[in-house]
Image (cartoon, rainbow, N blue to C red; front, side, top):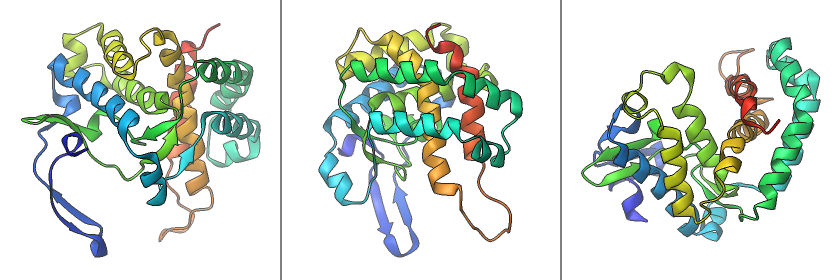
Length: 248
């Protein structure tokens, strides 16, 4: 899928180095709506057309929706682990109280019957570029061979509409940006009537990411004793904020 990423010029596996042509400007610095909707459509195109078996053979993990629903629920029930990540009690209480609604939201998403598909794994606007070749994606280090497609797009929406980004040029120019992005993505994916489910999937995508990073970093040991990457509480706090998207 050469149109999906900047052309690769040089690779050195021994040093994990990669050189590409410029793909343009980071998407979150672009104010043209067409660039954003194209990025959403190309994400859907990748999900639908990438070779899942080839990705699995390369070692890309799979995160089936129903399995992740169970992992999220078990994770939110593990208060000791949540506290060990430094999660505030108020946030912990909010997430734990929402477990029934979260389970229901996962069940509703499963009822849509979309298959698990290849995933970018970290699809946010600072991992997309807009330039002469149109919208392209980079940083494929977290690619999955299978996940529910809304886990990618849910994270994209959460990042884009974080309150800290209220002054993004595209958000200033298009107050209805979320609706437009959802329409472009779902049209490309072939499920135009799933807008409410995609919106509800935003907190689910953040919880999905928290569980994935917990598995990676819970027992992580680096060069600095007692320190580990704090992605997990970051995603949990975002998820708690986005719970308002779930049906009441």
